[in-house]
Length: 102
Image 1 (cartoon, one colour):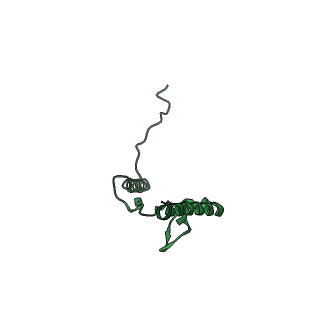
Image 2 (cartoon, one colour):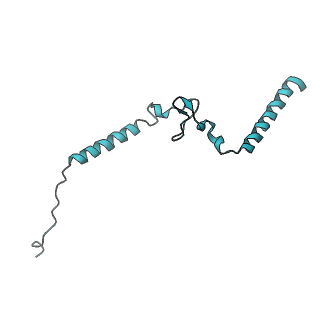
Image 3 (cartoon, helix red, strand yellow):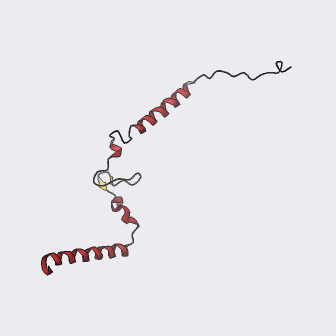
């Protein structure tokens, strides 16, 4: 009786043209990203003098953007003024101690 019941027959997988195209696309994307890894040189890894973070370009159309200030974007103007006076005072103190009072 069990043999009389219809068994599910496994069919052989046949790769279609869309499957092949998808595999090629995924493979080329993966290898392109892999080659950007730490052992290979790629222009996307360059930092230079001013690091550019993804989504925050420093230069657009050969002009500086507002992302140049970097982490200082989150500071208020009062905090920036305080830091400016603080570092000016430290520099002035150092300059006077070196040139006048020492």
